Length: 182
Image 1 (tube, rainbow, N blue to C red):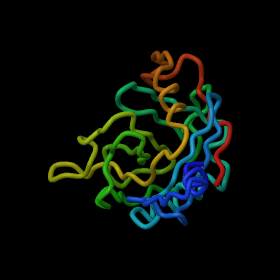
Image 2: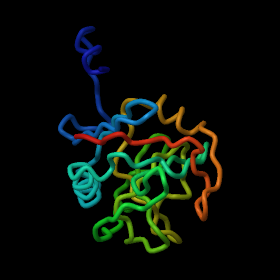
Image 3: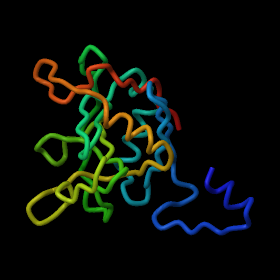
Image 4: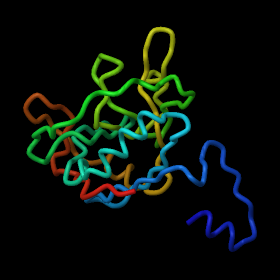
């Protein structure tokens, strides 16, 4: 939309990290749409992995199962009844790609093993420098950025949460990813 507005006004937009040919994914959620641009040139393994899950319909009807305001919103693994959806093999951590865990960037969730990311992802709700790769940490691989729907991220970040079994910070009313499409 910004590109159309700029063109109508005769303005030239200069992208800092973005490229017009980068893949984009639209998350249609129960609270609105989130559009993400994926940085294939910076995180080719991670983007290919994420797009495989998108194309397979993996994210459809899953929830944002971990919401921590001022930190992040996480999804891509659980149904509304907290059943984990099966996933493929883990991928190599690409946190050394120069991208930072800044507000509205999209990164892969993982366990303590740096090379354990599969389908779960998170959207940073703050600048989370401590998640970046450094001398003492493998970091969390940023592979995209929310380009439209930041207000939806803000809305999700404000939902009331509670513990559900062994899971913490679970929205009391599920926030569902209705579908994810390129």
